[in-house]
Amino acid sequence: MHINKLILKTNNVEKQKEFYSNVLGLELIKNNENYFEVQVGTSVLGFEYSEKFTPYHFAFNIPSHQEEGALKWLKARTKIISYLTQKIIWLSNFNAKAIYFYDADGNILELIARRKLKIESHKQFSSQSILNISEIAIATDDINSKIPILKELGLPLHSGDTNRFCSFGNDKGLFIIANNTIKKTWFPTKDKTHPSPFKIDFTNMKGERHLVEYKENILSHH
Image 1 (tube, rainbow, N blue to C red):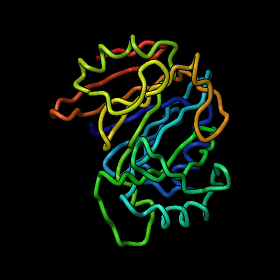
Image 2: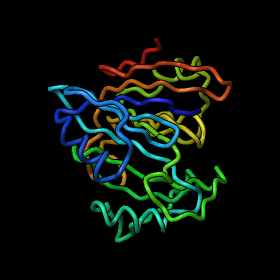
Image 3: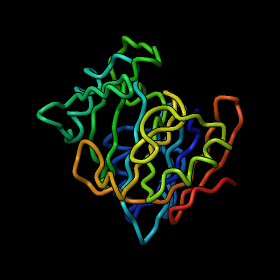
């Protein structure tokens, strides 16, 4: 699964624009008063203004063994979220190492180095090293109600337990789904899991392109 474009909400467009374009150094490719987009490797990340806002959890893929370089690069730009004093965290379920941080809205982001992707780089890490948007998390009170549409979209179960926490897609792109009546906070923080709305344009493993929206706990296909 490749995430072509992900559109999230923000109640402060300028603050987020400053973070993504100046702090992270991502290329600003669309910009107006109520909306902007940045290039994230082969994906596009957009933020549109909304008075109502709840935080997100999402991730960017980086080369498979470049987490040390990514940590050095990121530490110079923003604060790292540690877990049990660790700044690089091993995720056994995903065969990956991840670095977590917040953006200007308090969204939880991660740079994730997935071993199975087998994408190597020996260049010094920079914003240009980011490969693509890797994950978007969905908080819902009923994971199983989302499974039929995910299967219709051609996305297999990747890992986890469909009652509590699981993922659909593949290592290149994933929907991470949490039952927020059971899993009430996001790892590695204690931040509450919110059913935050988003729009996503992705291509599944069969090469089929889909536009999906998550809103008011409903996942719909356009």
